[in-house]
Length: 375
Image (cartoon, rainbow, N blue to C red; front, side, top):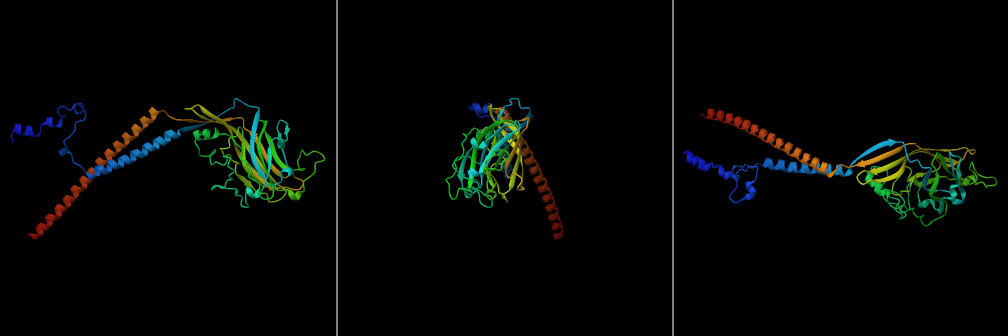
């Protein structure tokens, strides 16, 4: 075959753009003819694998970007207020007229909480059974359902800042007391108190058995003491019924008439902030420890909440990178998957080629030996 014939067969113009095709004329990546392309089953498998891995990593990056990052910082509370709001919803297994409530704070003020809180007669069996599980129209989680919207599952758990802020902006509403069924052997105490923002003690005791009981007050018979209780809500600051606090949905049963329950609470003012929307939620979190025991007849049985306020502010801020930064991360992820997949494909093809050559060589040697034996 002459030179002209070879040039006719291997004409490089055949690899260029076709006449009249403007788009292909500006193609910066030269294409090979289909007859010069060798298709392999391994290449298709690697392509599918790279696609799956890329989609998974992109989805993970999208979830991480949507969740954002949270930063927790402590600072001295600048806007110190003089008032503290306490929200409570407690069911005590005693009649309302047999219960005495009082607040004593470090400033020396004594507040008759009974005048500021609502009290409704109810039945204990409508709230909890002997195993401490809520019974009244309970949901799968065992919480009482009264169609008021406060029995939600959200709270200060694993929720993100934007979820907590959204929950806190819901309209506050106290649950309705269920319609009385059975004897009125319990009392539901609920509402909010506005107190001095100092250390204090809120306690529920029996009529005539309080440290501050006035002269002439008739004492309640000891056999009627029963400080078993259900705490549906106990929080500080603005009332956000959708946020669950450490004491919410707590059931404690007294083992004797003279039984004392003590809760020690350490309150930390908390501000949730979303930087991209400038939305904030100011509330309070608290840590609690509990101690309960039987007391002597000379002691004072009841339910005591001793609270103290920390002089710090916890700022929980949620930040989210910009859209351009997110797209750059996605490009980096896809590029990394393509490069890794390309090298993986090349290495696998090289390994198969080496293995094929060795196998052919071994088969060829065995075939020669058989031919020599036949000769």
